[in-house]
Image (cartoon, rainbow, N blue to C red; front, side, top):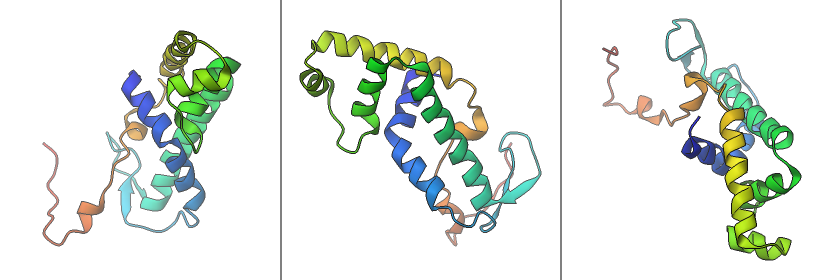
Length: 144
């Protein structure tokens, strides 16, 4: 997985976690394909979203907790996950470390997370808004 996608997951982690906790009824919603790539079976949208968001949250949280060292985890949490996010120079000041050291930990953490999150396949990496489907002027067209 590339670094930009990992950073996107980290930056949106709290939103994904909120979505998982907020989907109370996973039976509702329009029918969606189980696997967007090749499967013709369908699931209700809430259940489909719940599966995808749950897997993303579980994988990201597990990777942060398992793969990273304590120092790397601290940097990732403060930069991306904590409510009051900090820049690398602020983390360096907070931890009483050199900014270069914090930058090194950040880079190493992202490399490790890229490897750890590789199993997320196409079905789960493309989380996008589908509100356009309810636009009265929108028409479905079969993919080429």
